[in-house]
Image (cartoon, rainbow, N blue to C red):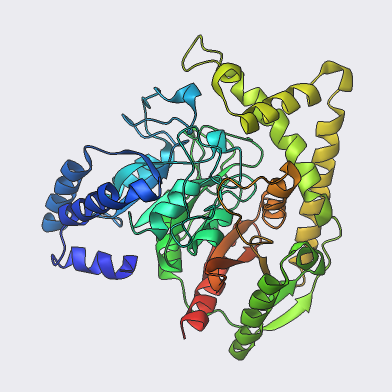
Length: 455
């Protein structure tokens, strides 16, 4: 059932918040053993739903009243375990709510549980969790993508209405594509990161999952806005995106041959191009756009990520809280810690980090120039189909999964994945990118394409 329809039933008293939550909890208990999307369910969820029902009855309910929302395990929810799917923090119970959680609770959304993920968000497959891999609900022997694997899978499997994830280089859009759902990375600075256990402070952004554009637009509107606890947030007006999904006129779609060249599976390119061609019935047009430095994106991303991750994990020493990360973390986390330590050595004087920042600025300038000629950029979200769980693939192949999503993080712009097709029963997604703080335009184009696909 779509979020909009469910909210209507709840508001009209035809479905209680309590029943909605109980139904999801029963489904999780029965079916999640085959998916492994949740690390913890919220034992107070039913009681919180009862309180929401009282507000609904009194006409005081918020925008999310009665909806079940899953949360990635690197976001603090008071009283629940923010383990980052790592043995390092497996006993860490959050002592406060992240800003996004406070906003959700104010709108009477119900946190149903904490989801599995790649350990410390290091990965793009969902396989690096210390508590076992998450499986793809669409194709059970394939990866769901990552690092927000559990959040994407929980929505796709029908275990919740909406979910939160974090996106540093594609960690929302990648699993959304593989799982066949909508995933949104807002502009850098649009959503507070206070309460997020970060991977890379220069790139991280909390975002949303839903089965449809409306649901993600609604949740994004709730969590957006400036926050005094996060100096990286911008004082840019947040809009009720879910109420502004009208058909946009005169859209020019930018198509980058450089991004197309990175899409290694020709069948995916064909599906994306097919939907773009269909969109021309709206009176839209396409324009070829150069992104001259986009091939540097992966090379720039990992030095930035390694250095900032290494710096951020120095607090996990085993003395203050948690266990010492070097003693209990998995191989991908240790690779990044070691890489960050090496790049950060004083003898290099920050050389590799500064080079990465220079490439990041070149890519940002490319996008700024591109958006002078088009309204949105469209590409595939992931360049190839998901591999089988447990397959031996190279580090380069794993990092290549994010080749199409990393540029949006480096540029600080907003981007969304919408499900587009299936190839070999595997969902394939389209990525729509818009200028920084132009989420309204992004959602409108996404909704128009969603309607086209449905029709």
